[in-house]
Image 1 (cartoon, rainbow, N blue to C red):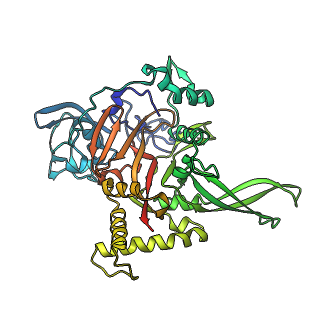
Image 2 (image 1 turned 45 degrees about the vertical axis):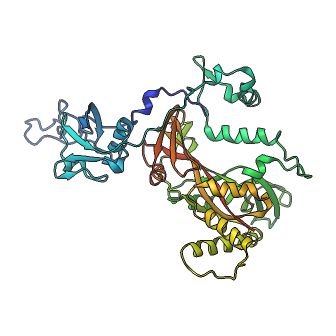
Image 3 (image 1 turned 180 degrees about the vertical axis):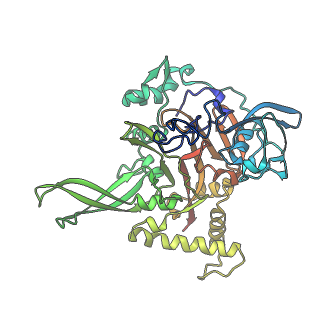
Length: 465
């Protein structure tokens, strides 16, 4: 979603809000203690840090020399690991953290080094070596803002704002930043109401075929023994974040079980029900939302969860599926395993056809199983064969990440990271595209002020059947 954060945030790294007691008071009261040298023996024990003493230093300003450039005032937060400092330099120079070689006392600066042992000083000049990422060629036509588009091209924006007034909120004459996941969900829902597959007698909509996730839900009440089942379609899986969740898969599994309170017909009052869900239908594109924003009751405001949650380049959701769907996935998954085995030079577990058609299908499965994103052949084959001849495997490959940068839930900056058809990743920061390495994409997992994944898009790995 369009945000209106000034471009200076593209080049600076936000810092923590520090709560430092500059006077260094002890954590217990000293009002009842007395000074041993006092004649009256009634003077309070002085603070270990006098009022005119300096507060503990947490910020150090240095200059950094890289090639012919000198960056004169770069702040280092020594309460954070050096990797955060390297991320700052990445914004300034375009040199990824893993390529940076920063000369300090004792050798090169490591990502997890202890600043107190490094001994960096105020005003010190640091030398950095490293090659910046290749600069992506800017588009020939500059960016066109929505407000400058012809009226006929503003239909989606006008309809979205008219149908969902919250997206039309303004501040100082400009549209306010809105939640990206809310915008995505409402956009898909709106499109699903108007786009239908013309060849479908059941009126199946295109959006559901591409993004819809079908759930089988079992709802039961332990107190009354009531039990019911239902089906529902959603357009994203939720990764719920808690102290026990360190990986995406853990958050997804926790999201399959929830509690709800509703009226019980047999008890004649409200009761607690447990809802167990299983995926019974998978889409071509799987959307994952990291539930990072929540309402903080004690402060009555929206807050952001900064906890680091790792996510993979390839995601297997087989164990999240219903028994019925698992049976349907077994055949395609076996074809995929055989293709991967053949590619690795291993014998396949089942006999496969030696015909030209069989070899052709196996070749296509090998291309699909690579998960490299080099979709030129794979996509072409998908376009040549009827849709029903390609079956889902329950395995998905990461193709896009939307990150949120900043600690606040009401501000910050959204950036998109998208995998191209040639397998390369590009970071789209407003109108500034930057090439990225694939191994850097999974580092957007949170844990600080750097970009952290908010929405991930995975593409289904399919095989011809």
